[in-house]
Length: 257
Image (cartoon, rainbow, N blue to C red; front, side):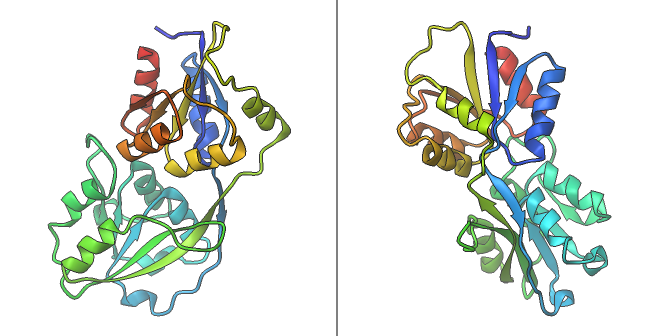
C-alpha cells in the first residue's frame, strides 16, 4: 500500500534525480528532487588511446564525460568494466557491445568494485594496460576508491587514471533552500514524514555543508550501499536503511515503511 503521509527527498545527481522522482510520483509516492551533487564535464587529453586493453568507468557521469571528447570508435573491441547497471546502460547507449562489458549480474546483492571484480577477476590481466575513467572534486583532484585498481595491479596490469567530470557542491534554487531550511531539528508534530534517499556519501557531506547546524537525529534515510549507511549515521541520522541501488528495490522499501 502507498503511504500518503511520507515524502521522499531524492538527492541523486541530475538527470537521474528528476527521473527517479517522476517514477516515484507515477507510483503514487510523494517525492521531491533535491540534487546534492552537481555534475560538470571537464576536458581531458589522452595520448595513445589504442594502447589500452581495457577501460573502467566508475559511473554514468564518467561515461557521458568521456564521450564528449572521445569518439566511440576509440573503444572498438575494447573490454569495458562497470560496477553499476546505469553505467552499463550508458555504454550501450553510446554504441558499445554488450558482450564486451563486464558488470555484476542484475541480481547481484550489491553493485560495487567487489561485485565487479568477482566477474573481471577471472580474466588474465598480466601485462594489460587499463584506464580508469572517474571523477574529480571541485578542486580538480581526482577522487575514487583505489580498491579495484589495486586488484588489477596485483593481477599484473598497469593502471592509469583520467577524470572526465567534476562533482561539485550544488547551486541550489531558492525553493530548494527553503526546503532545506524548513527541515525540523526535532520530531515534527505534523502527520507527514520525510525520507531521505542517498546514493552517495558525498551527497551527505554536501548536505552537512549546506545546513551545518541542523540536527538529523529524528530523520530517516534510505541509502544504496553500506558505506553510505555509515556516512549517514556519522552525519547524525537517527534511522538509516540500506537497499540495493535499483529503483524497483528502493520503491519496494519505501512502500514497506
